[in-house]
Length: 162
Image 1 (cartoon, rainbow, N blue to C red):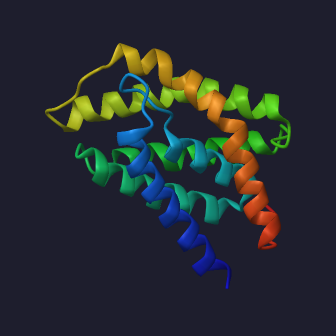
Image 2: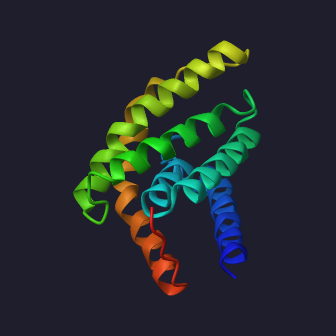
């Protein structure tokens, strides 16, 4: 019963991500909801489940972006592994930890995505506006996404041990 519910939740996230890019962006910039959700999922899931969902959502982001296929999947999977290592040391139930981790992880993830696009694709462009604004928006969105992820886990009784 657990996997179908997770698949439905992830599909709803993908639909929301596609919709918000068109209707909820501010001057063409919006939080990277997929990345924030992958970090929240990795913080509260087992290593295998968090990394698997990070890879699948990364492939979805690659399909939407139209760049180098596999770049976001690689970046999201590595981010999930790093978050799971950090989660052993820090308490992700604290809102300040959520905000700081998302704020600090957003810049390397954006730079890695740009670097992979520059190496393997012909349409690599660096947006200073997104580079400066998205980490702040991700940090603002982090407590909301972590709260929703925890409430979904509590409602469906999804508890795991790392």
